[in-house]
Image (cartoon, rainbow, N blue to C red):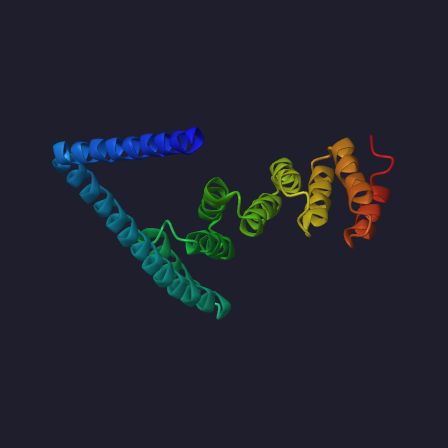
Length: 226
């Protein structure tokens, strides 16, 4: 008979604790009802603001994507003025969207094709600064800067950009060609040791690349250069 009584006592204690805790919660809610109401309203307001921001961003992305399509279409048709106009709309009105990086690349391309070198360099540098994690566009910007400086016969600067491009994106499918251009630029600036180093890197690190044959040709040309 004693064991059932003990179980009843334990059950009664648990029930009393539950009743006490419930009463304490009810008392707290009653005493702080105003504060709880304000907190709930604040939470609701934050959720509403977050939802509104999310909708706004989605809308901006859609609009920017549409303008981006127009810019790319204009570029494909060779209409550089229209390309630049549409790209500037994205950069000015939708700077935080995914299309902004593409717009900046198109801006650089247009200026480069027009021979507006300072403007092209500025656009490509900005792209690297803001979108360095975008491998596709960032690689293209590094490579474009190397090409621009090479065309301006600033070979050491060209070599630096081509080398930095390869170092930054070692697994990019065009990295061997970036090293190849770096080797040629070093050769032009008579930095033969550096030229040999980057060209040999193609042979060792990218033996299956189509750039290997050209790298060997370049190495043969400077084999006995000091």
